[in-house]
Length: 490
Image (cartoon, rainbow, N blue to C red; front, top):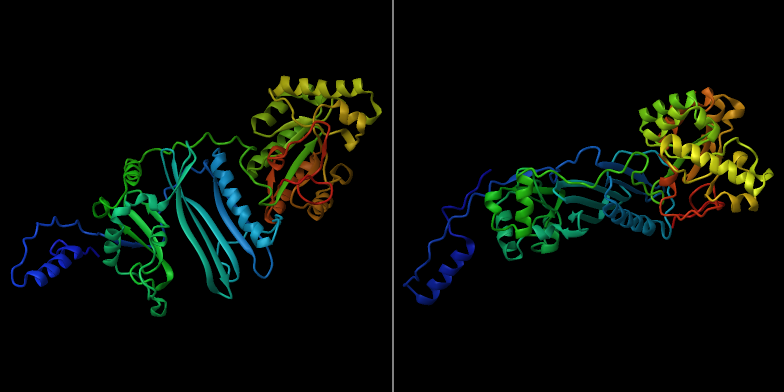
């Protein structure tokens, strides 16, 4: 499939000859020699190419809603690229809000394969290029009703992570050479059978250039859903890959620079990935739940760390100052693994029974013990037994974090009892209370985490759960969201 026009003049030149012949009768005008254009060397691909990042840089996400016309989305964050991630969040939330007719409420639903919904909106977003500071991402939004396509957005954009500048994929093409590109595409046989009833003339430039990409070899990839010349609809999208030789003049200067970086295999220079337990998660968009563990550290804490690592889950540990002093190495291992450590007082008293000075000693003594053992200054306090009042709130100097899901694990000491209890109470935005000092609690964590993930929850730390919310010292917080007693994220 390597058509060549080296033996023919370009169409524009042929038209010039015909016009000249008509005017001058039998005396043809001299014609400048035409340099043959390189062969098209076009190939057909099933989808736009992808130039993968390292697995540590990408964070895969998914969420969906229920109903007769649901919305389902899968997308990719770039770890550490907060401006990029926030822009993607804003776009997704606007779509989900519009679909909800107001305010999107995350739902805990099991993940489903990324297949096209026969009714509703399907969204896919993926990184397709990464070179230097530039990433290219493809965003596809498909609306179906009764199995019939009723709406489609398919676009590739490029962002310079160092500046935040976003460019449409049309920026890869020299505007003066769009007609030349159309001529190239006319030479490529389009797969499938176009629907002749949909012929509407050449597709607009904006549609033609909405999904332009580069392959690792520097080829130009163009994806379209209508035949460029006639506008006839295709049953499936077609992707044409054109060689660098055939498209050299067609590529814009900025496109040439990017092509050279890609062909030179320029290393992607992403921001430093966010540390474990601090990766970007938007709990207004997906169903989050925070695992929290009280009363350690001790030997059971060390066993729990292995389970969390196995599942690649991060939790928040509310530690007692006395136990930190007794087990500083365990406290350090919690911090080293990336789990936030918070304050649970020195001796676990009812703070409501203490004077302001006594409250201060309990809190500040624990702050000092944790910082000495781990280098971490805790950002939260959990009052023992959840007991608080105005005196406590005014004396602690930290946000008070309680819970909305009490496992009562200390009471049952039986995973067949506390796991069903948790699963019956947990909702998007929940804080789950457990105790890592009990072997029976740790025994149940593998099963609990599996069940929570299977139900569609993203298990997050408290900094992730409350991201974007200004927690006040002395304020009490038990969950995120719009449920009674929770703090709304937006």
